[in-house]
Image (cartoon, rainbow, N blue to C red; front, side, top):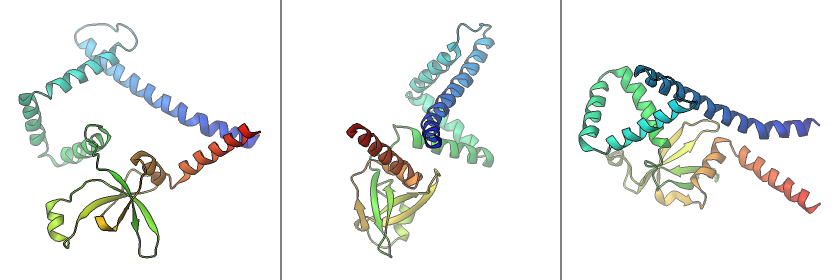
Length: 205
């Protein structure tokens, strides 16, 4: 009974938390949109009207940023604000996370690799770019160096190491699956495999 209860909990909990997170985001954006409606003396039209307004405004902003003068003006304002140290720290952190999540900015060169260690073990890593910054290239010995990220278990952060391309073993494994494996130290993959095996056994019965 305890095993069945835990199985139900671990299967339902991620779904419930995901729905709660997206609903909370919807509610927050809806409130912001309704606040904007209130500025022009428009009462709440229907549930979700504020959310739709925010989506429309974001779409319009995306169109405006495709216009050179608007993009230049925005960059100019940001450069001025970046003179303030606290703003620079906060903005840079949020901007880096947004860039990482943006599909437009995803580097298609991201590749899962194995890096051989001195004790004959291997570490799973990810090539994040095909080139290293010029200051690093000038400081490193001759060779084809690439930045390889080693994510830490249960954390978004990781350790970036510069490795010679010739020392890497390319792995035919998707970035998402390999990242999940690293972030959970293999637990999520093992649990998924175990669940699939149990389903296969049930089918055989």
